[in-house]
Structures are given as structure tokens and as C-alpha cells.
Image 1 (cartoon, helix red, strand yellow):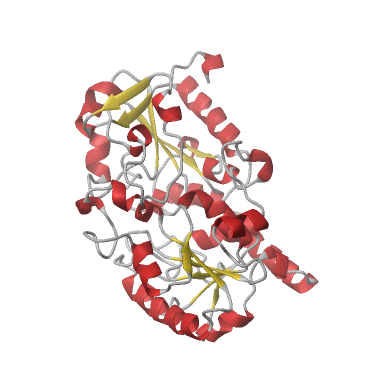
Image 2 (tube, rainbow, N blue to C red):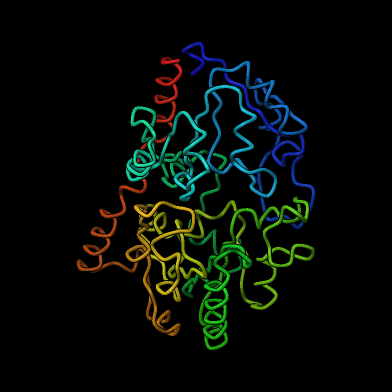
Length: 372
């Protein structure tokens, strides 16, 4: 964008972990915060109210759909602070089309899939203001696009890093915060996993990927934490305390964990199920989902918004079925399995446009800026 004489500034709060670095040795996160400190045209702010005067100087304000912490400020109040045109980059998840979040406050949208453009149009967003770019987050799931500083591990290195037995199958558990609106599903599947673990404790490598904010527990004030025990420990430690052989995967290794797992079991299923199919050829398993009021629909979303929960997961009737589930791409060696996977992927392609999202995003931003 510099080649087109477009000046870019990066706005960040002074207490952001990307500037301060990791303060607590228990935080399971690895990154080099010096690359953020040295960003050209970096604007540091003490509080969000400063955005009002700062954004007046710019033609466009860009942030991701994950930039707003709802425990700190709601979407409507946040965008009132922005005094220029606003653009949202749809990185992951579904909240880009949740009513009241972005549809009444945003001028332009960069969305990760065609279905989100269709839904935004039904929410009366002008079609010309919606660009289907894919998500830059998923560019890093392809070997030729991974940056040099991303530690892509082969199976041997991954097993060595987390002290896993390479001769055993690896069962990956994922969870949302244990006190979320889906706590009934979380709790039911927690009990199911507990039964399975007690029967098969030594049979598998057990690993856990928690939700992103759980990994920031020790860097976050208690009132902003999502965990079940806000004053005590992150949810991943609650899980590990109850399942001694469960290894906690650092958030940086989410790619490696998803790639090298033989079986994935969601305590609470969501958008990750789509991502594992399209990016890793790996279909997830779950239970106690079909009877929930958030199955294929979500609270706060329009009735026309239907999520593919029925095809994006294998719904187990009994937790012991995990023993016969082998959902990874390596397991789909026969023609029927491969054919079924391709059918599912074709149905899900409208949710994530698998492409060079970085390039598409830059092209779209240039178009937007040239139109202002």
C-alpha cells in the first residue's frame, strides 16, 4: 500500500501484551513483542476515548471482528468513538453477522466467505461495500504461505515438544469457556470425556486446545477473564488438574495440533469445525448438540442465518464411539471416505474462501480508499 502513497498507522493501547510482552511465566503464549514496538507510525493510547480525536485525521479505520472486548465496551459505544469511515476485517467465527454488532455501525466489510456477503446483504448492507477476501488468518494454514517465524512442526517434532508417544493416536479436546452460554453442552461433554478418559487413560495421547482468551488469563484483570474460576486459574488448568495425562497445547501450536491429531472431540462445537474440515481435511466429533436451541442457529442472529452444524461434525450417540472414530485426513484412505469429505467440503466452501487473503484484502482496501 505504500507504493500507492497510502499512509498507514497502527493504533494500540499502551498496556497491550503486544507492546508490554508476556509478564507472567505461566502464560502459554510465545511471540516476539519487539516487532510490534518497532512498527512504523505506531500510535499508543491510554484509553479508548482517545480514538475520537485520533481517527478524525484518517480516511479509513480498519479493525478485525475480534478487536472489541465486550466486557470492556460494547460494539455500539466503541464505534461511536470512531470519527471516520469504518471497515471490518472478518478474521474468524460468526459474529460478523450478529445483529447489533457491525451491521448498523460499519461502512465496509472484508468477509471470509460468500455466505457472509449474502447474509450481510439481507441485513441491508450495500453489496458494493462488501468484499469477499477470505481470512488472512487462514493463509498461515498452508505450508507455502507460512511465515518463517511460524514454527511449523512435523509429527515427530510435535510429539517431542509435548512429550507424546508417537506410536499412539492423538485425541484433541477443544473447549469454549466453561461458563459460556453453552455451559450445558460443555458440562455434558465434559462428563462424557471423563468417562472415556477413565476407561482409556493409557490408550491415547490426550491434548487440549482452549479458547484464545483463556491463554491470556495471567495477563488479564480478573473482571475481563472468561474462565470458570476467574480468581484462580484458566480453564485449561481446570481441565489438566482433572485429567493428569492431558497436555495443554500452546496457542501458537494450534496449527500443529489440528494437523497431527487423529481424533478431535469438541466439548462445545462452533466455527472451528468448519475450519478443520476445509483447512485440514479433519472432521470433528461432538455430542449433546442436536437438542440445543443453538444448534444450526444462534441467539442474536437473524432467522435466515443457518449454520452447518449438522454436516460439520460427527455426532456421536455414545462416547465409546470415539474408539472407532479416526477423523484425520490420513485415515480417509478409501475412495468412499475421500468422496464424502469432498461433498462436505463443497457444501462448506461458501463459509471460507480459500485463497490468498492477504493479497485480496490489500486490493480491496485500495479500492475502498480510491473511492473516498
